[in-house]
Image 1 (cartoon, rainbow, N blue to C red):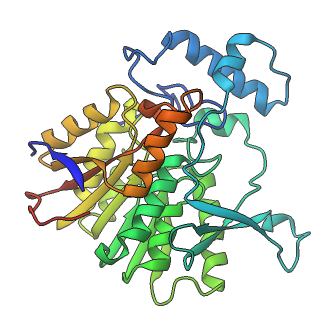
Image 2 (tube, rainbow, N blue to C red):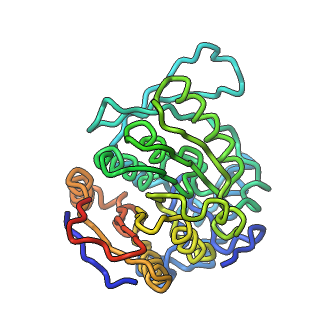
Length: 339
């Protein structure tokens, strides 16, 4: 695996979001405003908030500035197929529409997700801890799930996914494919956790988890009681595309540091988004964590990335779409570490 080893080593107001939410259907907010790919931060933020309110209130979007930020661009590396599942009681309102996500590379592994989550309320979006993972499976989460399947033999003991949103697809795949004792699926959004609870039950009833204990929990990175209850418990902590919210970045670093066992490891997948990934690495090193950055960590994902760079320039932007893999440990990472 190609990767350059880096030298190594908050409290947020949950009622006052400091960064604008992602574009409608695309998770690319909170990037460095000085990056060449960024437009005027204030104008974009204003347009995004207006778009969000109009979409949730089902108003027609006519403003050209709003149309510009609402365009859904690259959305998937196509690492999973989706097929609708006909439930026994399809008219049951709480059941929603279920889909089966099946790995293309490892078709023996699949998970059930709920596709139709219903409308989001404006007050939930504006006041909740974070809503970025509440719409769909983002590319970084998709890649993380694929990577976990490919590297399933490296997982052990207790595993936690932070900020998994409405699906926690990567954590689900670990619970399904890896020989681990327990998997905790977490997010800081109560609606997301409520949905994940239903996903766990659905997949458990289908016999997906074997003997692995799978649970869900509300975990807010800047809430000391949430973190202290789990401190030093996990062999592996992972999260996908959780670095772009400025007010939570330092809290995420501290949460990872506290949740890991002394010999544990964190896996973080996230796009560059200007300087945001670099800032996260600096914060992690300042907290005493060893950080290694890997760009070419999976041949299939890399080939798709190269193809999109060549053929999908209208829709694909490496800065916000290609996830870089970070590995974080409390001690030096051995030279023999293979990912």
